[in-house]
Length: 535
Image 1 (tube, rainbow, N blue to C red):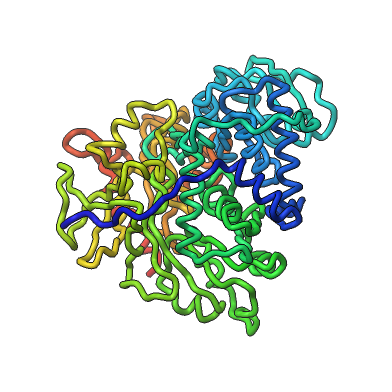
Image 2: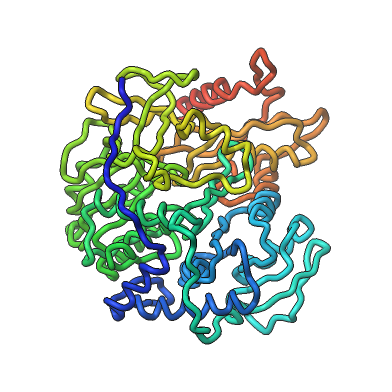
């Protein structure tokens, strides 16, 4: 079968900073960003970013600006400020811990780190692992900072984040050679080992925003809602950037809340929201109410599309739309709102991309056969619709980009009409409530326990869709360990969403003929255990 997709048109785009300046000039009073703690118009937001950019310059901050912040206006402001100052923003996953967090920070090579005061102790706890950081800018410290803070055998200069908020120095925004220059780094969740930083250009940001805007038929009157972290694609590229391109409003809350979701939709006048993981399941499982459809939302987009789609749409008076993509590749497949797609299909490839299904040798498979999904831009001038590279990881780039195609590591099939069907992941990853979790990282932490000989992490079906985390453990001879104690060990060393929900102790882990852990066998036996328990 020939690859799907086509050439399409992707015109030249400005940087996010120049586009913000246009919006602030044309619609200064229009609300751009809304957080619980602050509402910022386009003009007020640009003023804040000018101030922070001046502070970054005055303090000699160059290169990459890593931030470890919760969802807040400062996080997004630092993105635009960093770009205005000629630097690159790197929002870190606030769930990272230990070696994983140190790796993500070290990868940037930055001497500076912006950190929320609630996460300062976590950073200081890995001070001995930080290879470059010398100075911390601390957001909202509860009191005066001592000037120097210490942890892990290291000392760091410490300043409040507001030290960066100085008067605008009047300097123009840094002008990159082209919009193909980097705007930000977004980290993967470490699905095949250490997390990788996807380098995303200004062009990527704004073209992806335009593609999403086109697919969702967005306009300046829309209010976009994202209750997910600012270090994720959904909040930055999927919410802030489309609002900027359309001159619309973006609403970002601190986290997804079942009890507050529809309250927030009504409070902020939300017309478009995105969903991921089990969020729709949680909303759908709430008891129906007569006023369920009394909300301003017209569209929800995301993955995965639940089997109860039609009931959800009728109950809440809106349309749901699915797509397919990744941080690395962008979103290249969309359903068409209001047009029925074949059951199970994610939609069709947009004209800006080419998409193929290939076997292990890279040969294109015919319709209906399952293989790896590979993608590339439809034309060379559109190459920045995808990430530029994995920053600082040449081996990972060689593995991902082969023969001119990006290998997603995902399995899928296409039908005769070009509709894509997602069939799972080749990568050793666990998908839990919107997070791609590295089995490798879980295993490293579990195996660090003195009683553990060997561990294997894997996903098992969850009643809320996607997967729950399970780990099979073989103990050292003569050792004993309770599941609760192992979970306590994990909680202090990994993100909360990574902590295993299921712990199995086995005399020995099953192995393949090549002495690799037979995870397929573990999954199958665990599936049978879960089925038996439900009877």
